[in-house]
Amino acid sequence: MTTDDADAHAHDPSCRGDAAFQLCLRGKVIWLYGLSGAGKSTLARYAAQRLRPEGRQVLLDGDELRSGLCRGLGYTVEDRTENVRRAAELARLLSRQGCLVLVALMTPLRSMRELAREIIGDALITIHLRCDHATCAARDVKGLYREAAAGRLPHFPGTNMVFEGAADDELSIDTGRLPIEECLGQLLRLAEPEF
Ligand SMILES: Nc1ncnc2c1ncn2[C@@H]1O[C@H](COP(=O)(O)OP(=O)(O)OP(=O)(O)O)[C@@H](O)[C@H]1O
Ligand SMILES: [Mg+2]
Image 1 (spheres, helix red, strand yellow):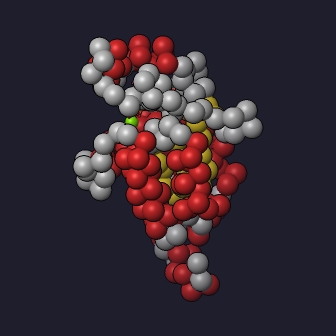
Image 2 (cartoon, protein in one colour):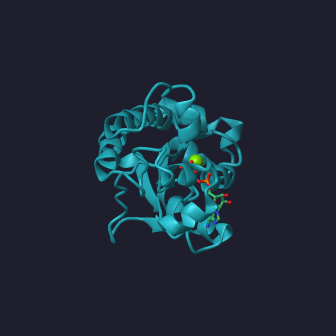
């Protein structure tokens, strides 16, 4: 961002207050990944409201991307990788214009997270929402686990496609055991020092 850009943001009324001012100056991408039902969409929605009450936050949710920008892509490793690539390119564009971008996308393989990192760079924070398969299957918000158990859903991470979780030294939140409020608190604590 140039000095002129920063000055323009500084005079933007939506950038009042220290935290909001910093957010406006530096875009960030917070990328939540995890199994279906782990709580990515739920926490991303809450976090977007709390991190940027003034606006300028953008939520890129897997389901919404697939209904438009990523329509036509399937669920193989190749298609999921392309899905991640498009989401990452869009997140990069938006973050470079000062937006806080929250991405809620399963992103099951480490290679996919690495691709996002290659595209976005240091502005990216990836956080694994850790929730075991049994808990996600019990939630079964979209009925996908029932479909997968019946053999009608190929390439479903955690069931018949591998899901690679976070290593011990990577950020994660235990959404399988902790209540939503506690998970949101942890997410905000992980994200806020970055600003
Ligand atoms: N600690 C928690 N964090 C997040 N969600 C929780 C938690 N505990 C229970 N839930 C519930 O789990 C469900 C998570 O659904 P959500 O749609 O957010 O999952 P998702 O990760 O976006 O799945 P998908 O990949 O299929 O889109 C919600 O019904 C939410 O209320
Ligand atoms: Mg979701």
